[in-house]
Image 1 (cartoon, rainbow over the protein chains, first blue to last red):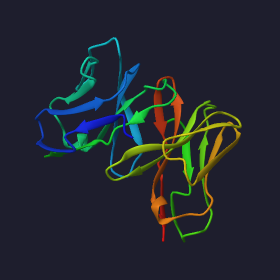
Image 2 (tube, chains in turn cyan, purple):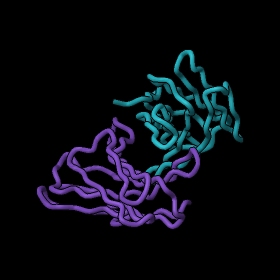
Image 3 (spheres, rainbow over the protein chains, first blue to last red):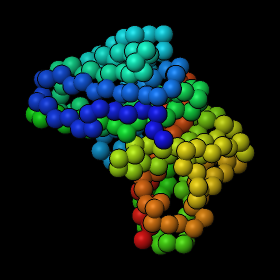
Image 4 (spheres, chains in turn cyan, red):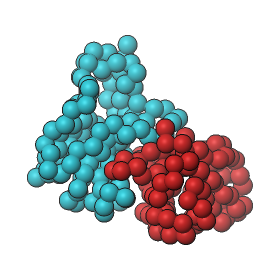
Length: 111
Length: 110
């Protein structure tokens, strides 16, 4: 069964707007990661947040983690057409060597 | 790019035939993984390896076997392919806490 579930499943926004995606998971974790997948390509690591962190930034990305609610959000600010991709959260409830991916959010940024 | 290649990139095969997919890495990473990706399911772990000849099952291992005789190569075998194994297969390595993925193999079983 999936450890992580992303919400929404699909999101369509205009270029320049912010995009927010959410991830909920079921069991305690050490780290939570976000990955991006462009159509037809492998996943690319974006950012990792540790269980003792509440917020992390990387460029236009902002990730929050609420371990009490077992949830995380990924915010992409000032979106660009090039941000069009699917975004997945991944959790490591069984140790960092083995992560479980969610079902993904498909983001479309309209120029 | 962690020097991961997969072969073949595309394959069409018939039900009941054996199929082997190859993952090759150039950076000597200990952990290697095979995932399948299907619409509505995200990525699901099939098998993974934590060293030469050391492998373990993932979430969806039925119908698949793996082998790792060299650090750089991790093979995924479908002994008798079924239509339910039509999917996109990704290989990955673990570098620190991050996974790096190969380009994928699109397998169609007819």
